[in-house]
Image 1: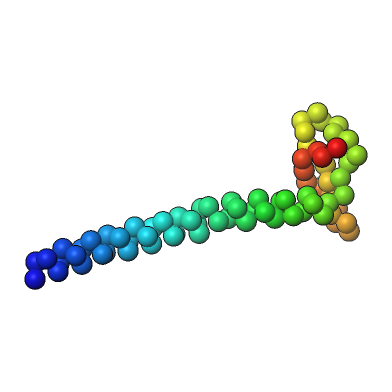
Image 2: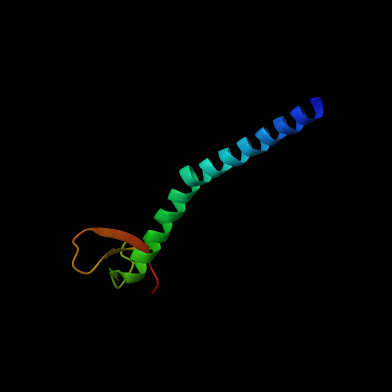
Length: 76
């Protein structure tokens, strides 16, 4: 009976560890990846300035029909 209790404890440790890793991924890593993907998609559809005016490798862009601007990498 003592051996079965040890295996149950180890199973709980493994399940708890996996649950913590999954929670960390969906709570921290996934939002960062999602925001980065959204930014890249917006930059691919954006209308951008023809040249880098700030000399920092970024240009000001906007989406068609929207007034808000955001920065994208200069591809020229």
